[in-house]
Image (cartoon, rainbow, N blue to C red; front, side, top):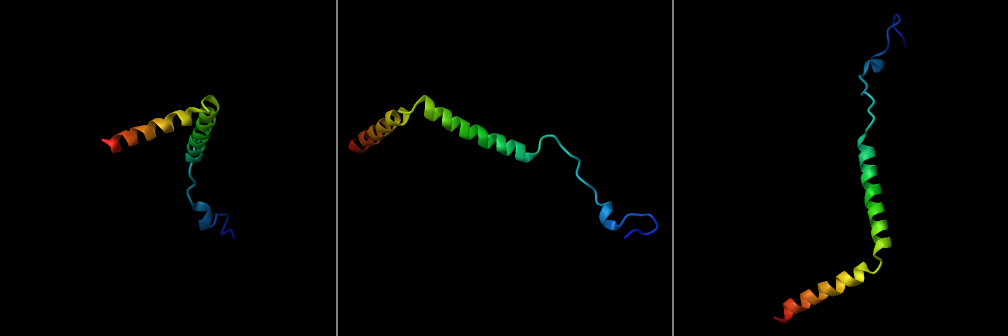
Length: 66
């Protein structure tokens, strides 16, 4: 309700200024970049994981055999 043309106390709250770059924008950009990098990596080197994993197993086995 108005008192003599003045606003209620609820209208006197300070509002945050609008900004162009919000934290949500950065988070969404990072998520999109990460998902895009995974997709690109899976398309460029589909057999990349088969080459990496046997080498890792061989390294572990050679350390155990010593």
